[in-house]
Image (cartoon, rainbow, N blue to C red):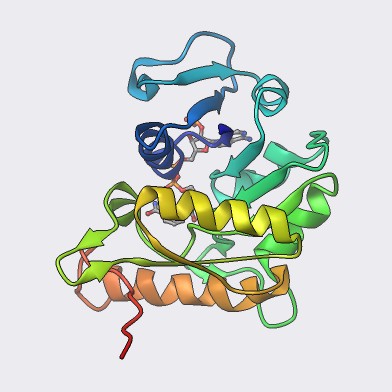
Length: 204
Ligand SMILES: NC(=O)c1ccc[n+]([C@@H]2O[C@H](COP(=O)([O-])OP(=O)(O)OC[C@H]3O[C@@H](n4cnc5c(N)ncnc54)[C@H](OP(=O)(O)O)[C@@H]3O)[C@@H](O)[C@H]2O)c1
């Protein structure tokens, strides 16, 4: 699958490398024209403007800082493509800017009305995106979105990366997934657990 990535930082490049290793082709959106920079160079990688890489792709991943998300997607013609939203709407003071009656994912959908937004990859750290496998099982990944095909694509790509991935309902369920991300962040950064742990689903 051809996948565009808007926001090729820690999350975007980590997911890009993992998805390329799983056989996908990655097209990185660059704010300045030029070839794929060395830090993003891996097998099956190209670079271009947002419009160029979206046009080459079947699926788009958004992994910018929240403060840059509106500028990154507004005015882009996604032409019905799935837009996988990995951002967390975190503002000053490390608090969510949306919640309970709205979510960052729903805001992204309003900024990008031509896309089929799916919330995914926001509930764990980039180390788990690089390697979701633990001795006791795979890190869980939940995805939610209103379009069934886009949601299935997100679950498939998360599974390709090695996650124990599950659909989690309509896009409004991001109102739960974004606070859930804050649980991981607080455990890692405030409660002393570090970044080497993941949420998993235990089953009988
Ligand atoms: N870090 C994590 O473990 C983690 C886990 C889950 C979710 N998230 C979420 O994922 C998102 C990205 O986090 P990150 O840690 O990867 O951040 P990061 O390392 O700072 O990377 C952000 C990237 O976004 C790019 N960018 C900024 N403004 C842009 C614009 N207007 N258009 C296109 N690209 C733009 C930057 O480009 P330049 O390189 O050109 O500056 C940079 O490559 C955040 O919303 C975060 O909350 C992070």
